[in-house]
Image 1 (cartoon, rainbow, N blue to C red):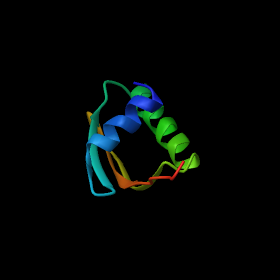
Image 2: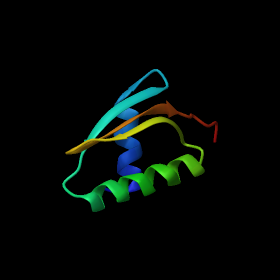
Image 3: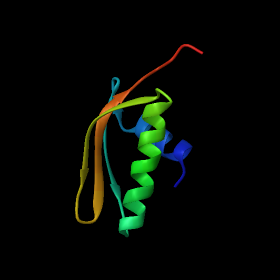
Image 4: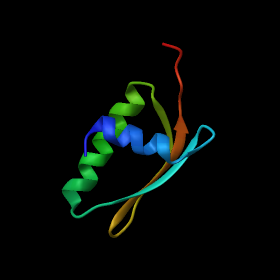
Length: 70
């Protein structure tokens, strides 16, 4: 999974501007990669993360998608 794919998955999981998604992870490394991608999307101003909950076999993300007028 890359950053653009993650953003598209978040956009598909939206309800209005809010998203809520659970991403399955196979290892601790997957969890770290997802955290890095989410941090990059936040720095770019594309999302605002409200919750980030690591679970045993998945990663739960909840937040807001920011739409820009480019």
